[in-house]
Amino acid sequence: MRILIHNIKSLSGIDYQSKLLLKGKEMAELESVHNAFLLIEDGVIADFGSIISDNFNIIKSNLNNTIQLDAKGGLVLPSFCDSHTHLVFAASREVEYVDKIKGLSYEEIAKRGGGILNSAKMTAMATEDELFESALDRLKEITHYGTGAVEIKSGYGLTTETELKMLRVIRRLKEVSPLTIKATFLGAHAVPLEYRGRQEEYVDLIINEMIPMVASEELADYIDVFCDKGFFTTEDTDRILNAGMKYGLRPKIHANELARSGGIQTGVKYNALSVDHLEYTEKEEIDTLLNSDTMPVILPGAAFFLGMPYAPARQMIAAGLPVAMASDFNPGSSPSGNMQLILSMASILYKLTPEEAINATTINGAYAMGVSEELGSIEKGKIANIYVTKPVPNIAYLPYYYGTNKVENIILNGLIQR
Ligand code: NIG
Ligand code: FE
Image (cartoon, rainbow, N blue to C red; front, side, top):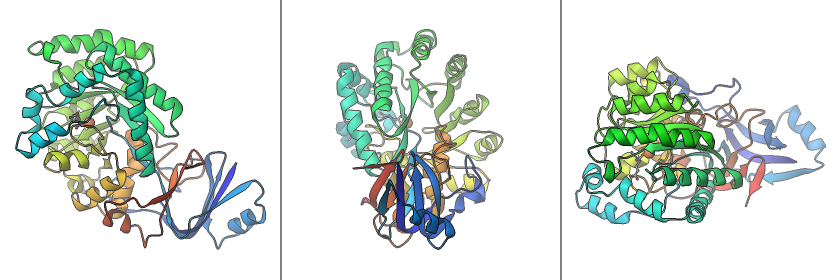
């Protein structure tokens, strides 16, 4: 099957060099072709370029079995790769949100059995089918906003049974959704109430029971730990990541959201694919990341929603690091998976240029979820996950005109989504 998209005002996010990530100054470069076409064949990007090119004339001379899609002067970009979400959950938590407005902190709510533990209670009561159906609706919603790949974590189970239930839901989502999905086991998201004061025993349960079962059913691609003040220590994290690595689970960890937890250093020590949140990051952590293959992932939605300090994205880029940005879609700290909103926050709150923000949410996001060889940029041979915008003046308009959906057409795996 062939699709020819024509009448593209600008095709952006092109990569001629097969880079797996963009760092430092490279992040400001967003390769584009104006007045462009894009040809998709059998689910992959087959060709692209200017309409004033020989290639385009040759393609136009043989349009048998080719669907033509008029971009009507819209932009075409690679779909967002959202590398950090918790989008399998049983219920919303707007009651806590009101408590937060009235002044309670995230940690205070967690201490009272709210927060993650509240979600865990509700997840235990929900059936696998209920969790699946509601998560599928969320996937449809984020698809509509231009996401083409998403990482989803467990972590609202906190018992072997419910962690496995969540991961089986994610496996079913992988089977039915056109999105590329990666699953992360996050048994170490919070210490259940019954283990208060016996945290090490909960870590033992994760290591001795949960990880072997998750691995034997091949339910996870990655392993995560909430390595932060009031949650899991660097020693707990060491033990859990060691155990996970024995089963080939590469870490992607929550670090430095609430304090300088040592999580970044621990992540780098275990060659984590990414360390995420990073509100409390200083030069020492930036230096550690510079000597690593670990992607720093910033979650603007969570910092915005919780009123947290913003991670030092500009300093990271100035130091030569790559930066990815993801939604953290979850019911407690970031109840939105809209990556267009993340694009706006990236530029408004973190001072990324529109080009840097797009790279942070596409190719660098793809790296942070281990899919940048096949997704995240416009490159021949890559999976055709792209979106066409409404007619908009330019790239800068995307983060600028925040709050509305600028996506007009969506193609995933080379198929037009309705
Ligand atoms: O990434 N920081 C830890 N975990 C989630 C919050 C989950 C929740 O509050 O339900 C996060 O923000
Ligand atoms: Fe998270």
